[in-house]
Structures are given as C-alpha cells and as structure tokens.
Amino acid sequence: MASWGEFTEAEPEMAKVLKSLLDWIPITYLATVRKDGAPRVHPICPIIGEGRIFVAVNESSPKRHDLKRDRRYAMHALPDKRDAEFYMTGSVTFIEDQKTRDLITKSAGHTVHDSDWLFEFDIEHVMTAHWEKQGQPDTYAVRKFWHSA
Image 1 (cartoon, rainbow, N blue to C red):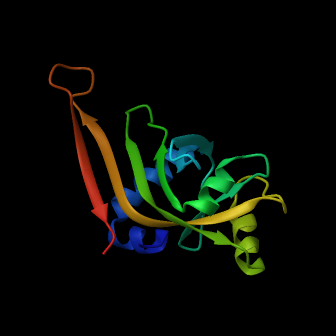
Image 2: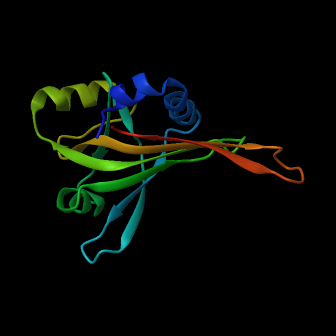
C-alpha cells in the first residue's frame, strides 16, 4: 500500500486527474463492504493534506461501520465534462490521534465534526481514463494503471 504522497510522487499526472476533478466537483463515490458481504456505495468528500488522503464519516452513515469492520474500499470520482475518470482501491486506517484529526480538520474544505469517524486511505491500485474521439464513431477509452509496490 502507498500513501497519497507516495502515489503522487510516482504518478504526478494521474494524481492531477483527481485534483482537477475535485476542483470541479469535490465529491467522489466510495464503495464499502456491508456486513452481509454486499457492496454499498456512498458519496463522500475526500480530504487531501500533507501528502495524505482522508475521509470524515458522520455518525449517521453506515459506511463508518463498514470501513471499521472491513477496511477495503473502492473510490471513483465523478467524471468531468470530458468524461475524465479517476478510480482507486485499497484499505483504510482508522484515525484516532489528535494531531492527525487536527490536520484533517485544517485540510478539509468543509466542517469536520468531533463525532465524525476519520479514515486515511492507503492506496493499492489507481486507474485514470479519458476518451478519445469523444462523440464520434470509434470513440475509445485511454486508460492508465498504477499499482503500489
């Protein structure tokens, strides 16, 4: 697994895709695993700070229990007007220390409540894509993949 900073250092152009998408709409979809093994999908607002990527989960969201029980996730950003895509998978780490909570609160573009559960995303796999010849015959996706060492 890799941190956001390690991924960004290895693949800066791929990291720019997510940053650009979050500048446009700061929401991604997070897939978690329910207790019964079924997938669950939620919108989230990722938080990037000091080479790390996090999520704050409010107390009414079932995804907090999903992530605490089964740390695996998949995250997909909303495609932009050109259908650029960013997708990553890995596992999360539950954050309890105050120093990291303070970093997340400072880095967030939204309110982080004391009752929120905080998780850091560890990254295993990333995929970016864009479309060539969009809206024309023979439209095709150009995908790039990265895996942590």
